[in-house]
Amino acid sequence: MRRRSFGSEAGGTADATIGNAARRSRLLKPLLLASMALASCHVPGNGGMSIAQTPARWEGLPFRQATTTAYALTLYADGWALVNETAQVALEPGEQIVSLSPVAPQVEPRGAYLQIPGMVSDRRFRYDLQTRERLMERYHNRTVEIETATGSIKATLLMTETGPIYRIGERLTTDPGGRVVFPPLPELAVEPTLEWRVRMASPWSGSATASYVVNRLGWESEYTLRTDAEQTRGVWTQWAALSNQSGGRYPDAQVTLVAGDVRRDVYRPMPLDHGGARAYSEVAPAEPYAARYQYRLPDRTTLERNSEVRKNLATAEGVPVTRSYRITSAVNLYRSVEPELPRKAQIRLTIPNTEAANLGRPLPRGKVTVYTPNRQGEQAIAGEPMIPDTPKGQLILLPLGEAFDVTAERKQTQYEVTEDGARIGYAITLKNQQAQAVTVEVSELVPNDWSVLSHSHPYERVSASELRFKPSVPAGGEVTVTYVIRIRTPNAPQRVPPSPEPR
Image (cartoon, rainbow, N blue to C red; front, side, top):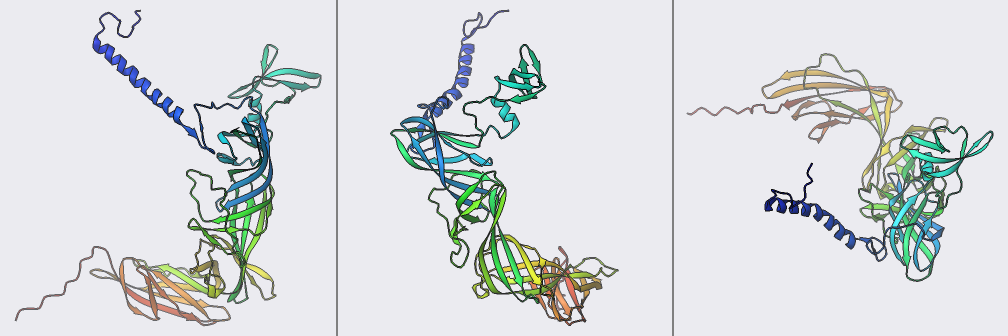
């Protein structure tokens, strides 16, 4: 077989030589561009550092352990937090590794940031005890001891995709038949550790600040509403439920809470002087932050591992409460022969989020536990609804479930097809078995273009698709609401009045 060479093979042409050179040029061009980009790239840090000038190496560099002195936590409502950790560290001239441990196992190292008066070129996260497989990988091709009933055996640990294999002498085994003991290993990260490779021009000793993101460390807003027996007034309390499932511990931390969703497509560390706003309370109201709100807890808080802590943020007394009953139905565009099954009215409490109601503050989304006393004066839970983010001035709507003795029976009383649609009539019989009169909101959802032809009670056209009545039903009595509507179906021909005959 003949070996081909560019431009020298017998019968080769100048065009072939030029084509081969062009192909080599196309192959080399991306490599050249990548080399140029790598040579000009700077790693983010205080002042930056050229990768071309400083190769990414960690072996042989001295370690400088940072000692934590304070924590400042910014907790977000969707289960993550920014940790600002202040630590004392002493650094020498030249390159070295600043080590911070322990940190939470749920740390996100990609956004870790270290503030020191030097250049930071690289960072990494190490935790060799995170899984059994990771620990064994650290001892790949190293000698371990196998303790058996008859003594200790030296073996070499070999890691494969399917698990560990031990070489004892000239033999291989997957089951050494004893307890594996790992000897001491330099630089073994037995705790979650963040490390930065830094270069100092001169000696320095002081406080460094490390900022990093931790998952499964966040907060939720919770509320309690204690009403009177008639549910006309109540005491509104806002709570902050702090949850720490990150695996780390944060003693005596300054905590700031952020309400609202924060997009995290690309994480960028917040400025170290982010400060924070005061807590939502009479002495520390919520303050705007990036079109959201922040709350700074007035007292430092210790968050233990796998713990939940609840903080009282605010209490408002004498809050007016309005209880209403609702029946919601939809108009059927087809003939209904049988009456509908009886249904129970939905109970809903309404609270105005205004200063006149002793509120008037931004309320982050959260669960509201409503307590109402029984006849013996004992508190019982009347419902646990969720509220969305509620700005100042909006209504707080608290659906509590079904009323036991306020019901409705609904049947279609008229159905007539017309040239442009239909005429449909309904009768809704409301029954109240309570000891006092109640007002029931009857909401009828109507499709297409519609108008009311007749009605037994005053009505309100709430929207283009909702018709509402608000009759009062006496104690132990009943009321029947009737109405007839005309519905014009889409694409129905318009009725044109006849033109007058010529005289």
